[in-house]
Amino acid sequence: MQMSGENFIVVEGVRKSFGNIEALKGVDITVKRGQILGLLGPNGAGKTTLIRILTTLLKPDAGTVSVANIDVLKDPDRLRGLIGLAGQYPAVDERLTGRENLVMVGQLYHFSRVDARQRANELLAQFLLEDAADRPVSTYSGGMRRRLDLAASIVARPPVLFLDEPTGGLDPRTRIELWDAIRQLVEHGTTLLLTTQRLEEADALADRIVVIDEGRVIAEGTSNELKAQMGHDVLEFRVANFTYLRRAGEALQALGDELPRIDSATGLVAIAVTNGSKSLIEAVRLLDAADVEVTDLTLRRPSLDEVFLALTDTKSANEVIKNNVPI
Ligand SMILES: Nc1ncnc2c1ncn2[C@@H]1O[C@H](COP(=O)(O)OP(=O)(O)O)[C@@H](O)[C@H]1O
Ligand SMILES: [Mg+2]
Image (cartoon, rainbow, N blue to C red; front, side, top):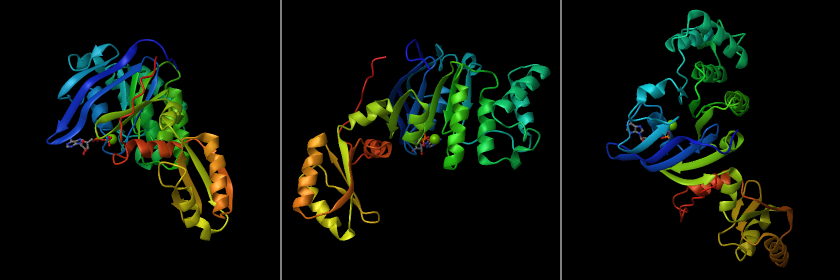
């Protein structure tokens, strides 16, 4: 992890339409050498389109793109040897074994047969695939396929790596296992751009997060900075008895700018407040006056889910938040 240094991925003013769908509406992104950028956005935000442009698979309608100091649009052939890509769906060959897949990729990169086999052995060990190495990929679990796909993307030790939703479709436990594999990829100074639909995942893996929605960058920063940009805390409590729920909601309307969120299944009430501990005291006063008994009263920072929902909810997103972090 390295926070200073040269820009190694630079995207400026990139636009791309498919017919009348504007997938990217002018995107600017930079990633420093050795940094991990999490490109976070909901389905359809434009993540894969941007990855395809960065990896020479698609030409933008406008804008400039450089990776590893190479102009991607002018010199795609020179770039291809320097990047690795693991797409949204594993691209490994089902009929071949894990080992055969990796050897084949090595040979595509013009490794000698000996070197390709040697590199395959290293990667099978690194990604905990030794036991399954000589079985066809069609017998692999989803997590194993993803690990093999990650391994295939780094056969040639590319200095820049792109991972498009590397844990998409995996169950939570397998996803967390894969995070370790991804952390290993970047131990040796690789610059990584990874996309995800989960802020939690971007937070776990990335140095910096860029949030995109509907083809535009809507926020950027570390997860703490994104939380701080929300500009409020969340006051939360449970009612001791569900019959208090409505009264509790009504009593607190005076407290925040927005209406409290009430979960009638769990008895949980949450409201955004800007006055920190003053709000906490006021809440206790209001609830007491309304004769509402509560438990688990806490004041907390917004959760990652709340940040992401607020950022990508176009109906309530009243302003574009952009935090230019000094680097
Ligand atoms: N080849 C294509 N033809 C038509 N529309 C496309 C194509 N690729 C992407 N799109 C559209 O562009 C938008 C962005 O898609 P995509 O980049 O795949 O988003 P994400 O990867 O964030 O889910 C979506 O509305 C999608 O339907
Ligand atoms: Mg995608």
